[in-house]
Amino acid sequence: MKTIGLIGGMSWESTTSYYQIINETIKRELGGLHSAKILLYSVDFAEIEHYQAVGDWDKSAQVLADIAQRLEQAGADFIVICTNTMHKVAPQIQKKIAIPILQIAQATAQALVDDGIRKVGLLGTKYTMTQDFYKEKLLESGLEVLIPDQAGIADVNRIIYDELCLGDIRESSKQTYLTVIDDLKNAGAEAVILGCTEIGLLVKQSDIALPLYDTTVIHAEKAAKMGIE
Image 1 (cartoon, one colour):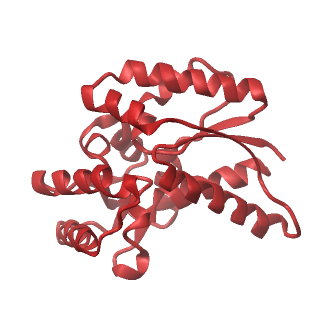
Image 2 (image 1 turned 30 degrees about the vertical axis):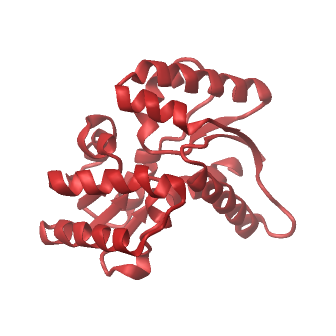
Image 3 (image 1 turned 90 degrees about the horizontal axis):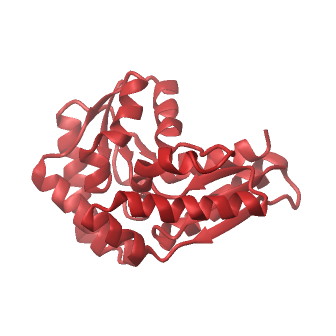
């Protein structure tokens, strides 16, 4: 079994889901008392969020690259960055380590393509929804990507940082998300990517008919299976 190096804490609320899903997948695949070999480095998210807010992506890349190097030195066979947004700096991190980074957008794109989806709505932080670093991975797979309007982008982003990252789950915010998802459906989306690892804490497949692709679940299950390949 390979050792999985997790860079978590962005936020810790969703990192707990990664730990649980990875181990549940290992148990399902191998049975018995098997569990995953994991090294977890959990950051202080306030520091990372500050670099996001001021646009200092180079500094955040430096911090996460240092962590990735520590995980590699400790014996990790590959790296899992437990957040969508910080994959923006994955190329810089990859240059500092010899082991691979499991890309969350590529894993999600593959799941969509395998299911025959061609036009998909994307929810996430404002960085994930509006910048190219994430969407280009989806476009490279032949997917057409739809995002909310400016008001929807602002609402989705605010709820992530002001509520979900703090473990604050509100029914009113769920309804806001469901309205945004309905708008994406009306615009032609065949499915919606929950492109922030916290969104799955709020919106479940049982809440809506349109297929939802929770990147936390996809990424964590892929990590577990990569760990036993």
